Length: 76
Image 1 (tube, rainbow, N blue to C red):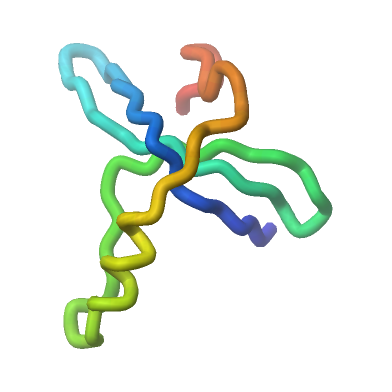
Image 2: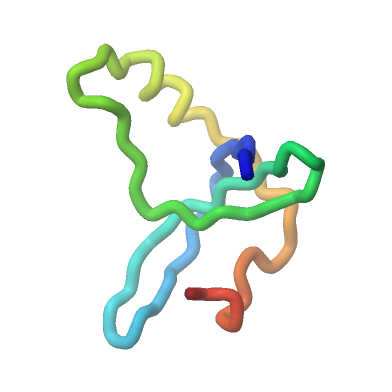
């Protein structure tokens, strides 16, 4: 499966037992058009490459469009 996602301004807290992780909500869709939301706590580019364009694109954030992103029953 391939998905195309864009970052949003929304941040969520994911709780695993006693640990809490902050994650940014990214929204997008699959190749077949199914809307998805992804909770991404970290993202990085190849350290050997010029990251200036990556960093500029990462700063662009849109408003979230989906409602509840990830009910607790959906967490792995």
